[in-house]
Length: 618
Image (tube, rainbow, N blue to C red; front, top):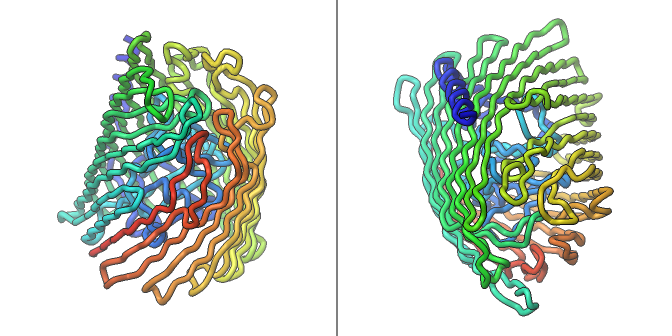
């Protein structure tokens, strides 16, 4: 009865948003849009990769795109469900957005980063600091936001095919066209097949092979309607997949084989602008059905169980901005109210069925003030669980930016943000704990940016994150999730880029991070190396061809109790424009055939050569 009441409330909020969906998404570029209600992004506070950079580097999906950012760790245990880490924060602590819609599934709090093709992507933005309360729930570890091609605009067709020696192959196509009277349509479809073979170690110590079979097919459809001051957008997306999920960092060494997964996402949104006032409304739903088999390890010689998962996450939000100027001071006042509801049903053969639901509101208020070389951005809010308002928690974020000259800027960030436990952590039959409280993160950051015209950019960042009530399996019994203890992470990042976009350029990056915990010791975060170095050299010739050579070094790190040795790897990519419409890209990963471990007992692939061909007609 409680679930039905909450479902009715979620549906009512969704329907309430529809009549007001009279919007114009005021995106910063001619291609991108945000469907769900979100705050506008402030330039200079995020890392950005554009579609042009993606195609020139031979990137085929979101996971590979994020791997281009030195500050981001993209981890593989095969090509199944790739994961990312931001400054020691795991993926369940991040807010993963596609056109403003949170896409992580509520049971495990994960999302397959390899499922978004580059033909849909216009821009990727990564915020390494915690999300503002104006972003709604989640994001205490940062934000990864994908902007996809909007429907309105001129006719456009983007098609891409790729094949590699992994082996794998993919094809995707995205197109849009106006339908008249301000109405426009965008559609996309594609598929991928892969079957790379990884060298693994069997439990007895003997060498073995793991065939990481992966198959997917996806399609999406978007409709947009524009008026003078408004735009309405409706979007639907469907995908079917079969793949493997590597063992988790903190739970077990079991391999999860996804025999069939169906995912559906629908969203309707609006963005209205009248002078200095903006109103954005949106509602979404994500549905997931997944059938999985579990094995003791990568050799798949011991079957341990079958699981059937059904999950849903839905929500609605309203966001408003009012901007005005008094003399040299420009002020923007913001307000946001969001409601999110999630439920899951998990059936594991031989165990009691699991599942449950959760729902929460997040109200937030914010203000941004700009004066000459100074800007201040502040927001306050809180998470309010619908079934236990007494356990609400406060959130806040403050950003102060100084720009004393056109060549230097200094940014200070302070934040307090929480993470709601996943439904698995709450309701899994064996390990779940319904008494878990949200993790609470306190965060501080100092960043200095240098811009020497077009020949040099540099950023130096120091940060500190302290997590209270860390949610992990009890380290003594390895069963039952608990709010274990506090964990602290601090680090330093230095990135220098020279002559970007010129005939010859390059860059250097050094990333340092360290974590500590009273209970888990001095190395409490798996796959979190203390040192990473990266260097790259790029060249371009009159916009007709180019190449990038990248060298990466990763120091020792732990995984499932095993210490993985340091390694250095070299990647090379080159592109050439064949004619006005066509571009070819050749990419070689692990060029020097470095033998290193991706995960405990899983070796990296030998050199993989991939050839991509992309055509854009508009």
